Image 1 (spheres, rainbow, N blue to C red):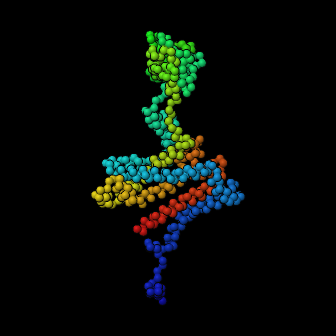
Image 2 (image 1 turned 180 degrees about the vertical axis):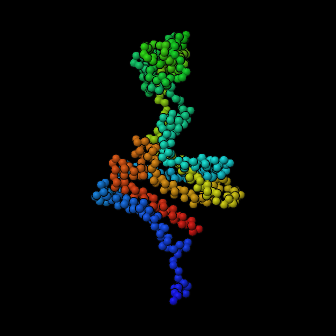
Image 3 (image 1 turned 90 degrees about the horizontal axis):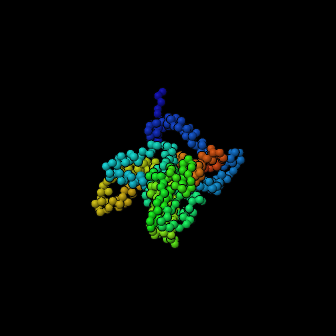
Length: 446
């Protein structure tokens, strides 16, 4: 007897349930099962275990309640990490997105825009570890090694006078004494027709001016004051104090001032062989070597010091991710209706008005995507801070992801605190993810 297919309420035959794509429910579940198992093992289980572990003490045997979470907001090191994370979330995505927007808009108007985009995007091909090593070298304190300080010192020395002989000083037997503020003066006034002696020590031979010549004793100047300023040090020994020996070099460029009653009446600089001449107005004056001769050479900015280490690391992050923001925003610009821009220009709007009132509002969805993506990314930044910040400043540059590593695997590991930090990071990411999902659904309904 032939079977009759079952029918629905309207007399239509019932068929086994299929999804929209025509796949049977059981088959779809079979294909999804391995992915669900991996998701549960690698994501759901660790999250659940971390939440549970965060309520226990270091050993994991005693229930600690909210003590671990309370310590997150009372311990100074953990508070620094929370504060630095807030700084990262506010500034790093904002600056990277703003630069990406500027680059994307400006490169549309230049012929070599594609090459510029390639150069800006290239750092994305570098790993965080490699970028950290690069910027650790960029921020080196020594201007001969660190690019940032090499540029900064070059600019500073262009507008500010550099010292000639840092750390140079006289010996007690020399005819010079300290005058306060880092300057030195002769112990006795000088007289016209006499030869003044200005010996100093403390200048390494490698720091002597390259044009310095062997010092020569100055002949007396009729009606004026002649003298010699030299490095009173003979390599290998054998020299005599206050005597110009054949192997001793002149202090070329040393500034000498004649001071009477607290007023500078004459000044000059020593020649390559250390000799100098002052006019007759210096008669009876005290010779002063101003502190500008001996000031420590400018060594740049301490980029990785306690006060600047966080902005310095954020700068390296922006260098890497500004290209990512630029490419996404450039894609949004490519799909923008050009007739709106042209209509605004025809109506008399200038370029700034077009950018502010037309371009930015139309790019708002893309900017939101970039901003939210970077916010999620900076919440878990670890590599750059760990590599760039030196050990002495790592506490000042600390962030939650780095503190999670230190609390979980450091010498004083506390898995309860580490788990609490992991849960805190999850709670911080969830609102951003929820906003992103809601925005994506709203875009899909349009």
